[in-house]
Image (tube, rainbow, N blue to C red; front, side, top):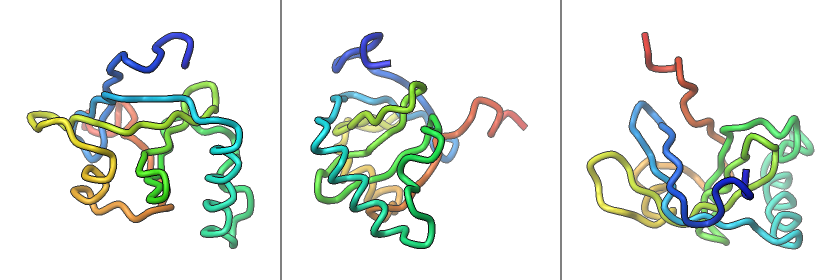
Length: 119
């Protein structure tokens, strides 16, 4: 995915039936991924390697130490999102988004699938 969009293209998805546009994205370093996955696995000791299972696309987590949303792309790789824009709102940092959506650091979520809110 990274080669297709790079760091400046705004991807649009939805979360809790609201449109969310990724404004700033970056590919994390190998070291950053290892540190993040270690933190994530420590938080989810009851389900080891939760950070890697299946490389499930659309899964994301707010990480307070990096102040970013860690999003799994279609290829299973992590992408860091540091600024987002929720529909009809100003651009916000990932930390502001997490506060507004009441996301706890390390808690795993999924973006809405296309048919999640069609009914």
